[in-house]
Image (cartoon, rainbow, N blue to C red; front, side, top):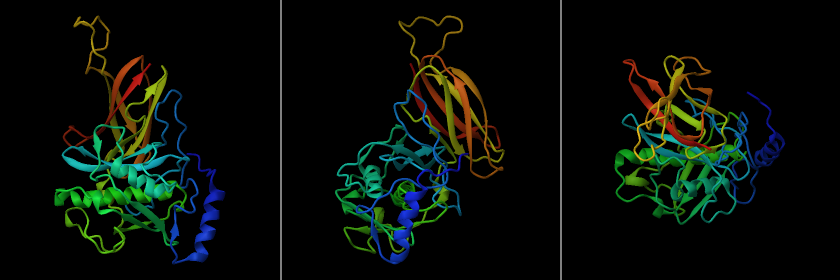
Length: 329
């Protein structure tokens, strides 16, 4: 991977301002600088309708785990149900946050509460917030002040921790993506409700102290490129993402979503809706049981397709599949 950081100068400039101000909160809506984190994203393919960078989930003991983004691109974490578990997935979006003031952390949190994910399999555990303000200290403590109307009424207590983690992952990812947290550095979130500390969150969840990422809630398999709904020109499609398995291998499958016209039976060799077009294995660049990245390429003729990447359990059954729908023109 290319380790060159094109925005290193900007990040160092910000940290130079933060160091002498240790213990003083720096309001992100006043001074904002773009981009940060270990590796720049791969350039998007031409013809993509969603120009979005990619990156791996964070691991326990790591920093933010986020990659360099671009001006106007915000990371937002969503909840997806996979193999009977509700887990966190990340998307990058260029959508403008409602009431945006140019604060990337606040804007990402606003989108988390009021925006819509590209992937219809994802959703949020929050309601639109009428007020979001943020600040960040020299110790990488992000303070998010959120209006109480963002808490979803009737949210079951079993989902309360997941909702808080959705916010924690989104805020810390946005800070790293904007260059407010250096590569490999850890961060935490203090959540205020209508300006008050020590309040209770969704379903009465305690919000005392600094909140940190719970890596056990990150989905084991992600497709980060392409994103759901991408439209591509006829070409070789690069599929990339991250995940982990005990064998350092993931499986993938591409199925046709084209509908037959007039109910006519398909001719020999014609694609059938739901039929597997291509399948294979993707090697992870990590040791067994640890998070790594994968990439594979596949040539597809014009049509609509579903891309699925998944693990196999000990019995050979599919688990934790992530799917994306794309169109080749």
